[in-house]
Length: 160
Image 1 (cartoon, one colour):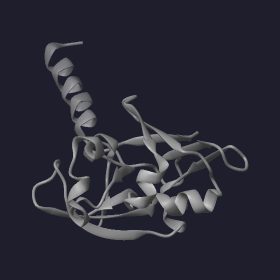
Image 2 (tube, rainbow, N blue to C red):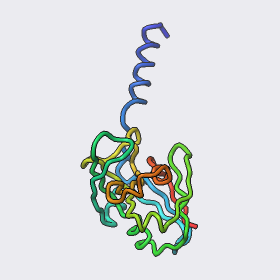
Image 3 (cartoon, rainbow, N blue to C red):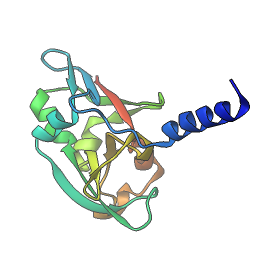
């Protein structure tokens, strides 16, 4: 392949890698497994939204100024699944994994955010699912512990 064609082909590939990736309609964006009837459930964006969403505005360490997030309350997810368990092992697309106490997620009103400022979040911008706390609602949430529990690009949650 001539030099110029190789450069153009490389640019096409690199450009494609830089584009924000949005979940295809109906594609699974979150898998939950563990202590509930059935033991495993996959959700698309539409299925998560159908559970009911809530919105809050908060500051975060990752954004300039206040940001409005919309998503499913973790408490609502647990309720719908009739799930039990004390720990949620949250795993991101990049294999980052952390154990989070379920009580912390529920009590502190964490959500599985799907939208930021009214727009779905692509993988390139912490989406499609981002566990976020309402940091401005309680100063006690502004800690490294809660920041580490605010997992973006969430792929799965295992309830134990």
